[in-house]
Image (cartoon, rainbow, N blue to C red):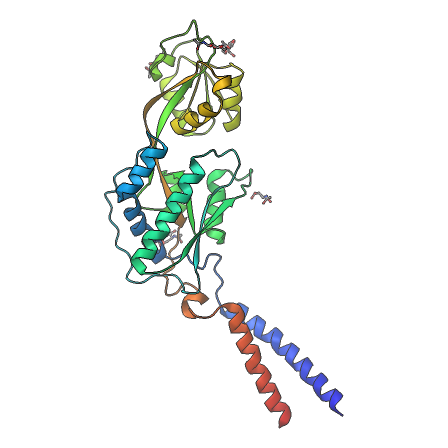
Length: 333
Ligand SMILES: *[C@@H]1O[C@H](CO)[C@@H](O)[C@H](O)[C@H]1NC(C)=O
Ligand SMILES: *[C@@H]1O[C@H](CO)[C@@H](O)[C@H](O)[C@H]1NC(C)=O
Ligand SMILES: *[C@@H]1O[C@H](CO)[C@@H](O)[C@H](O)[C@H]1NC(C)=O
Ligand SMILES: *[C@@H]1O[C@H](CO)[C@@H](O)[C@H](O)[C@H]1NC(C)=O
Ligand SMILES: *[C@@H]1O[C@H](CO)[C@@H](O)[C@H](O)[C@H]1NC(C)=O
C-alpha cells in the first residue's frame, strides 16, 4: 500500500528539483566574475595609490631592482564608502604569467604588490581577506595581454598583478589601475661579437652604423625604437627566447630590450657572455595592475550582492526543502 505513494512522491520531487534548478539558473544572473564592478575597480585604484605612495614599497623596489622607478602617482582616488564585494568571498585572486621563463625577481614583485594591495584594502575596510596567487598557464596562441584579459573576465583572476605595460589601446579593453607601480628602463645589451674590434659602444646612437647587427622582440616597443633610431644598422626582429640564443651564438652585436630582463639574463648567463654589458637609455613604459573593464555597479552586480550571506547551492537546498515540505503536506491531504 505504501509503495506506490512514496514512488509518486519521489517522482514529484524529481520533477520539482528540475523545475527549481531551471528557475534558479535562469533567475540568478551569472556573471563570469562576480567580484567585478565599478566600485571594486575604484577600491583597487584607491588601494594602489596607498601602495605606490608608501615609502616602504619604494624602498623594496629600490632594493630588489636598483633602477626600476616607482612613478609618483598624481591621482588620489577615494575608497568607495563600503567594500563592494560579498562578505561570502574571503580571498582575492591575483594572477600573473606563470610561464617558467619569467625570471625572478618578477614573480617575487607580483606577490609583494598583491600582498600590499590586499593589506591596504583590509586596513581600510577592516577585513581579513587573503590574497590568493594564481600563476596562469598561458595559451600561446593568444599572446600575453589577451591571456591576462581573459583571466580577469572569466573570474579565474580578480586582479592581474603582473607588470602589464599601459597602452591607449589596452586601456580600452581592461581597467588599468590609476597609479602604475613601475616604469621600466630601455636598454641594449652589447654582446661578445667583435668585442675587440668594435669598442666604445655606450649609447644607442653608437649602434646606428652599417655593419652593426641588432635584434629585438618583434612587435614590441623595442621594434619601434630600433626603427626610429637605428636606420643604418641591420635589424633582426625575432621572438622573445631567440634574442638570447642570438646573444649566446654571437650572431648580433646588440639586443634592444627591457633593462631588468637583460640584467637578469646576464646575471644568470655570465659564463656564456663574458665581456657583455648593458647600457640603459631612457624610461620605457609605465606598468601596473588591472581588473576587468566593467559598467556594472556593485548593487546590481550579481546574486552574491543581492543575497550576501547565501551562495547558489544553499539557495537551491532551501528551495528544494520548501518544495519537499509542500509535497509532503499535499500528500497528507
Ligand atoms: C587557445 O586559444 C585559441 C584561440 O582562442 C583557442 O582556439 C584554443 O582552444 C586555446 N587553447 C587552449 C589550450 O585553451
Ligand atoms: C650581420 O648581418 C649581415 C646580414 O645578414 C651578415 O652578412 C653579417 O655577416 C652579419 N655580421 C656578423 C658579424 O655576424
Ligand atoms: C642613423 O644613421 C642614418 C645613416 O647615417 C641617418 O640617416 C639617421 O638620421 C640616423 N638616425 C638617427 C636617429 O640619428
Ligand atoms: C670577448 O669575447 C670572448 C668570447 O667570444 C671572450 O672570451 C673574451 O673574454 C671577450 N673579451 C673581452 C675583452 O670582453
Ligand atoms: C561602458 O559604457 C560606455 C558608455 O556607455 C561604453 O562605451 C563602454 O563600452 C562600456 N564598457 C563596458 C566594459 O561595458
